[in-house]
Image (cartoon, rainbow, N blue to C red):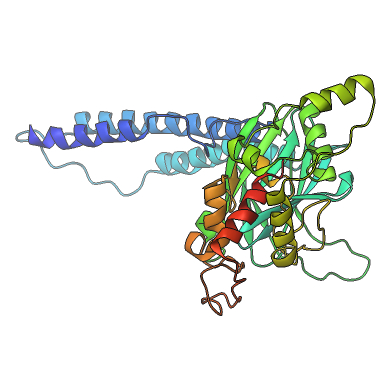
Length: 388
């Protein structure tokens, strides 16, 4: 009886661990044509595997019963090779390989096909964050959260700014390495990796760097926001404008990370009458936060309409709308912004960003502290969170 319990227990454990659920990085919940093709190939190979497994179990059960040892049974006849069986177990696996290879090759060609017209987005991997550029939309730039429209072919042009990374959002499709660009002979194009797909449903889809790239590789997340064409166009317009609506610190603290506060009565009156109203006075905290940002952060970070010089760190335009900070690691709120600005190394080791608490830098980063007071850090955090 004990000999039966162990296999049954292992079987039960296997069934429990195989239970499906709603996982944010599931490769078996495709949401694009690219992912559908890969999933279909996976299902095809799975059923081929189950067919082979069933055949092996049937043959094995027959042999165990037919040729089991019995009392006073003679010794089995010794044989030396069997031509028919040798041919069978050579041709059989070859046919199975062919049956798997044909749909695999078809899937490879299908996923490499370049659409005639598509939205091109340049994906750049950094240690440890993602940059997204829209070259066909005025070169607009954002970071860590990629926005794309549903139903429109998208082509991601992928490379790295430092070491090798790997872009992987399982529900959108397969992995693609982000390699550093290499020099090529004059007249030849630079070598990029590409992913071509069309999103079939809206939502937020999680991804991850899938190539070990340093201390915080596991903390280098991706979020892809698929939205309607109208929502995407509106987001692009707001990204180009910077932060079209002034949001005070108190409004920022009460606002969610989605959408904007409702228009005020004067704004509605202006829309109805067409008369221009005098711009409202800026909140003093917003002014102070912007000045602190310009003095301490703008050499690395850019904000459209405020300072566009910083290109070596994530673009912070519309930061308040993002659902997360630090490449998906922390929920986007003022307290987490204070924590991230104040001591990024405690959140993401190896981040190339100075912090409040170091004096002279902390290995392996040799950046000096920016020497803001805790109150100033919170003022900057409130300002960044107000960018909506």
